[in-house]
Amino acid sequence: MSLLNTILEATDLAAAYSKMGAAIGAGLAAIGAGLGIGRIGGSAMESIARQPESLGDIRANMIVAAALVEGAVFFAIVVCLLILFL
Amino acid sequence: MINQVSEIQSIRSLKLVVKFLTISIFTLFCNSDVNATSIEKVEHTENSGHESHKEEKFQPGKMIMEHIADAHDWHLWGEGQESVTIPLPVILYTESKGLTTFISSKFEHGHASFEGFSLNEEGTVIWEDESNEEAIYDLSISKNVLQLFIGVIFLMFIVIRMARHYGKRVGKSPKGGYHLIEPLILFIRDDIAKPSIGGKTDRFMPLLLTIFFFIFTLNLFGLIPIFPGGANVTGNIAITMVLAVIVFVTVNIHGNKYYWKHIFLPDVPVWMYIIIIPIELLGVFLRPFVLMLRLFANITAGHIIILGFFSLIFIFGAMKPGLGYAVSPLSVAFTVFMSVLELLVAFLQAFVFTLLSAIYIGMATEEHH
Image (cartoon, rainbow over all chains, first blue to last red; front, side):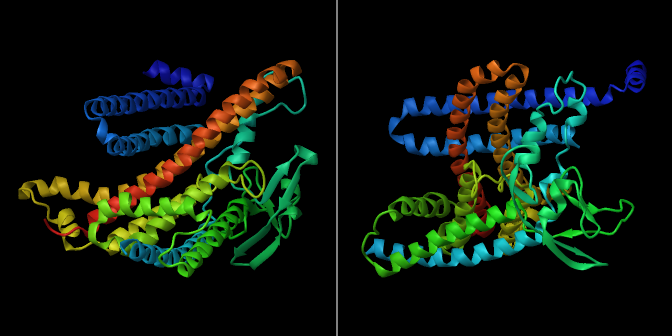
């Protein structure tokens, strides 16, 4: 750890590493969004296949759940943006 | 018969929408000193590390931030010296000088200063004498405020005419274009408000309708590329904050005693109070905060992606002019695809905001089961 600190202080790379951290964070957030919304979509597809007449209800609830998961992802995105621009 | 009654109630709701719109405008006017320009930082310090063959290298970060952020003039077209902008009034309040008003062209895009004020790099008004610590309250009609006025006047025009049209034709179906808006209003009442709020929907319909149409209209205006559209209003965190504060105030004013009982005296063993009560209190503040953040981030991210696809053309063009032409059909195709997605997002974010507001209001007003 102290070697890392020395290198960062000596070469003024801290800003660059923080940006790399922000970029990796944004990528992880995208993975989270993909996993979450993929599961929601998958279970929605299965339940529509089991009961085609409930298509409208399932579609509406799927969109709501997807928007809520996206809300959590955007938390992460906003933190990464703050790192980049503050 | 039932359709008549529901139509009359919709008309009354529509008339009350106007009152809420006026309140929103006033609250936003007072909040306009909190703007999103404080979040962005000009990127040219990093870009100057690249090898630059020309004097002015294209800086995509700067261009994107200029389009996203608020400004004191409305840029129409052109670059640098020959840019065509609409200058907007600057209204400042300071303790020493009182209320100062002037047109923003006096700033000459940040190169000149006027009456002791000047523009810094991010577009905020600062004292020309940098050591001065006095606060400047910026109440100007900036780009976002003007876009807000345009969007709201457009919306009020439609809504007031619609209310009058329905009033003149009680019991009959409306003519023409109102067939587009009526299903939206009935959708909000029957599928969003009634399942969540139950008996008292008519009391909260004006608020929910206002929130939905406000967000939807301003999202759509943000997608129009040229004046009178194109300012990123709902991507301004001050505006989404005001919407979230309105929902927060409504939910907590209309919270009945079961709502407060859930928070402060929940139905759990006493030793869990120390864990549950802070979590519940945090939830009271966190839910509107997440509402604000969701709308802001969705709309801003969509705009950044569209602008990023456009700036691909210029980045490739700066390398070789032919490459710029070659990549432009691809870039335009991607941008059209993203814009269609943004249309969906415009509706969806308005829908989700309204739905969650209805759910929170429903939680606050539900009777004991």
